[in-house]
Length: 192
Image (cartoon, rainbow, N blue to C red; front, top):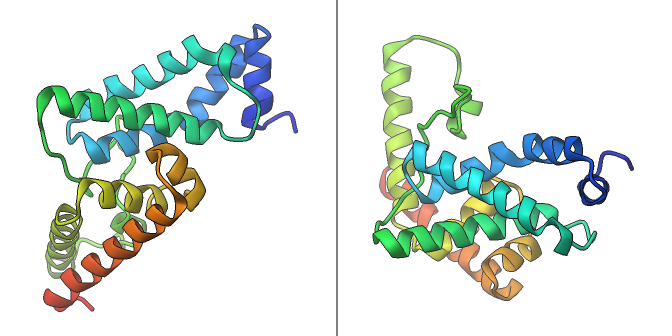
């Protein structure tokens, strides 16, 4: 019970800055990955990640312990990305080959990649990675966001609905259509 987000937020609201530090360490990687999936610029994603936690710090007194801190963080991140993209009118796509500052892979494919230096396997892997990047790039921004939150961050439909400020049914529809598009794209490239 002493390790939940709600408990740590209450501790922080009561003046315990170490609790805030624990929350930052717990969530910064996922928030960074989410932002990087929308803003394909590592330095900017890092800056926006810091902004998310600055906003959390500044608005901590308004947080109500409902077990939804993670959703709240992703909503802040989503809004910051939208604001940035509106200002800079840049389209972004998920990069599956990015590395974080700690050199940890952000790449789903790397979780299953064999640690081999076989050039044929490496070439095949790079081709598959390119196809998946193009498949995700073919999705609308709304579909891609819902898909990434669900598949990459393991969020529930209700959490995604809260972040995107839409109905749960809309989330289900976006993810369903995203899966169909990705599946069709993979079939077209003889990967299914």
